[in-house]
Image 1 (spheres, rainbow, N blue to C red):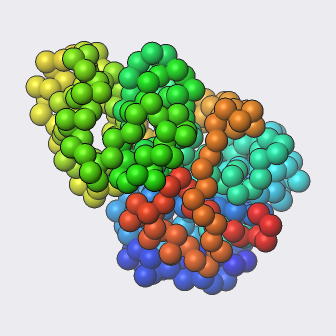
Image 2 (cartoon, rainbow, N blue to C red):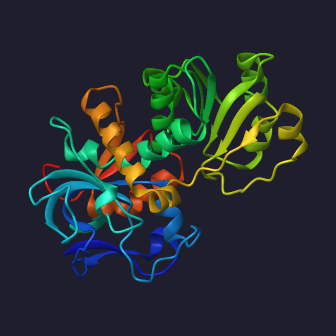
Length: 328
């Protein structure tokens, strides 16, 4: 099968479009004929050797895909060949075929194509886990999302808006600010031309932020840690700035707020049935039009390196999708 292979942990320069061995599903896995795969920052970070896990080289990058079930392991009960699905795994999506655990696969609603379907699992499941399971976000609360124009950030904006929260989105650029408003943000803070601390402080008022979802890390995290409200929840999700921040612990102490970790992959491994139910709920809402995944652009599979570079440089709004089969 045709695939993108990462032959060294050197980022996009170590990627090659080549032939690879076709995977075989284990007893609890599904084999999917991939039509489209989306590109995440995690894909880029893993290819650079900067993620928590390092697959054995060479490996096929890619966490998220959509396509048609080809075969099922003997213990799989929820799917059968011919099903249209969205699926996820730690890697393996940038290929004509991939395997995924049954609990990491969800049926695509009628009317949702493979391009959109490939953008859902990692982004919306992360946002769902962060906001609903970890933050316990309530209607009427104020939530701030950094990196809000990226895949996970935009999913957080949409789910928070769906819950009934007031959403403040931090982005870089006027086009991104307009887009996050279209997806439910009440306010957009453009860090390219505004002082984030002053603007967020004015928007949050004396009450401060109830929930902060931080995808960026670095100095921005330290700034937002001082703007949290009483009994707030500060959730680090990722560090696209490249800097893992530290926190002066007197800040959560004085305001009684919590710092809540979010590692959706570990949750899926430990509580697969809960994650599967969340995936089904997300798919239902996508099918109903309550959640609207944003596709930035579509590129052919062989341009995966270019797509990963665009994501790493924060040039994408929403998800970039790789077309694996024509007509995805």
